[in-house]
Amino acid sequence: MEGMRMDRLKELYEAKRAAEEVIARIDNAISSLDSASSWGLFDIFGGGMISSFIKRGKIQDANADIEEIYSSLTVLNKELEDVDMHLPAGISDTISDGAFDIWFDNIFTDIRVQGEIKDTLYELKNFRRDIISLIERLNAEIRQYQ
Image (cartoon, rainbow, N blue to C red; front, side, top):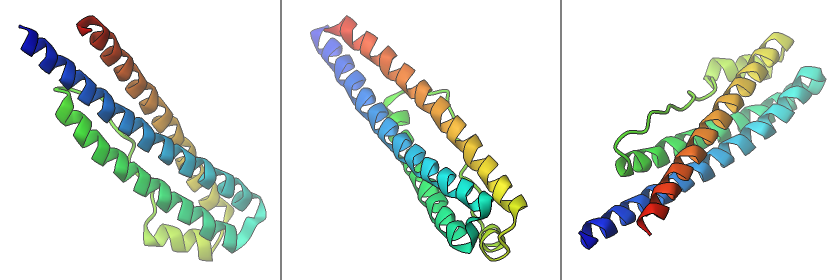
């Protein structure tokens, strides 16, 4: 019985560590998107080709961060039987989007991209809250086993 309790406690700690890693990855993505959003606002209000280029780089960073969230979530899913959550899809960063935004630098594309950044930030912040709730549930169960 004591061995089963210790095994369960070990599993809970492993799940908690995996969830904390997901939080760290989400925080990285939020930081990248906040930066992209700032450059996006500058771009909307006349920043030009250079600000579009920098904004696109920040979006690429955010999409890479989101991919790392997926990797971390895979580990978390292995630790938990069922995590009923989803991640936002990466922000559109196709070659044509980037070229249209940078070379033709128009307000309509800038506003659309800014909206995508805002939506993804909102989804990531909600997802972060979900993972924090999961960590709180894990902590509650850990306390029961200690």
